[in-house]
Length: 292
Image (cartoon, rainbow, N blue to C red):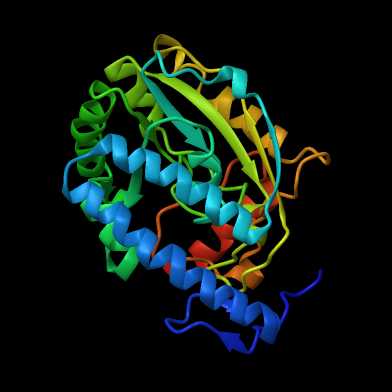
């Protein structure tokens, strides 16, 4: 099994971004300064002015600019399954923060469910707070779901699509879905729109590495939506279909969870999908060893 490459020497101040070469370091520093500086402040100002239309327009323009800057090669299909006329919960596989660039490019007015720990990030935290994203602590279980139900209902009532990452982590495709999004869909009458995103982890590997790569391929597949009354019964089938699509060889490679390299993330609640029995047994054995 190949090991991860050594961390690059040229990092951007803050420690979360780094480049492979001096030339790319300069390019990355300039781009990060622009897209996280003036652009970030424009988004926050629009949010503080309670102008969601302006926020959504700027989000899409920001994503288009970031895409060009990073030279992302897009492989997209299934856009015919999107519509702004129905209450929708977008359900994307999650590989990293670059996923939001893919989602903003879908053309919908989006609001995200995000971990409240991201408020500790200077620019990202300001954006999440000022644009009133749905911030929860998923480790709180039922309390988190009550917050999701209250806030998520308001988002859908306002005509926006709600984005919920069902795995709740960026560990890899093997992480099992949580059921909150499907339960919410049934409660509030929203359609589930599955979105398979693969390859985004290769653009920026954080928190595993600060390395940023240019010219990477990202695959996006929007699958047929699931009506509200079928959401709960079809949850497992949706998960299985999304992961089968993600692992198709024609798509950009999906992120895989390798705890011997990535660590076991003991401070976070997650389960491994039973469809990956070897990894499930590895995690179970590790957790048993902690309990001894």
